[in-house]
Length: 221
Image 1: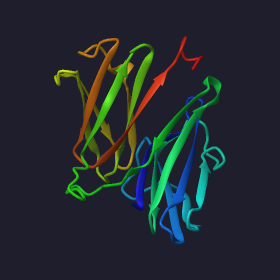
Image 2: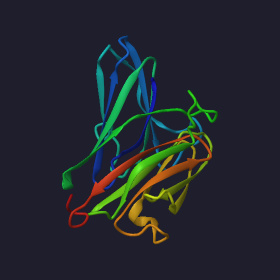
Image 3: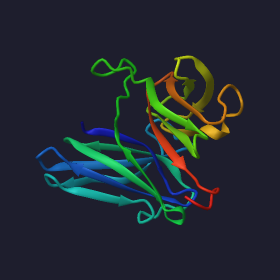
Image 4: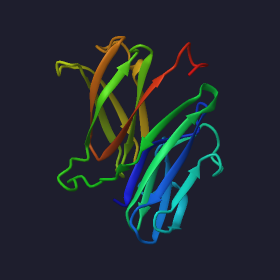
């Protein structure tokens, strides 16, 4: 796989992100990485290119620290990776003040509406979602892989397979949005809940599920 996306990278709310991309092809590789802000850009529009044709020898890794690249605090979006040959990638988001870190693996960028290799790129699943369960909550980060505005429905299911709540977000072209479960209101998703989610869009998308636990409020991780 040479085309990847990290659904969320960020420097907002005290977080910073370090991204690692490794050449696993056994050949000299050329790698590009483009950031698209959460607010959305036009098709092939104003992304910010962080790497452009970066040469990686076989087995070599490049590290991208968003703050080192001049990003201001308060930025959130997705990172798109394109390479000549196979690479793998991951992101480490860390929040120093609360001693927290989240690890996100890049996901294959299947962005054709007809699907690739029999896949449906418009549907994703989150098998484990917490809402105020022993202090755990969940952030659902959704990146729109399309050049079109993507209307996305997040449906929560209980153990019995019954739909208990829905959330709808509209995501501009090549943008991302996130749904934080405590903010979803009281429409069937009560406190101390464990659910799963199905994420459906009109166009191709990817999603990352974050499980976070704050002890004693926002000041303590």
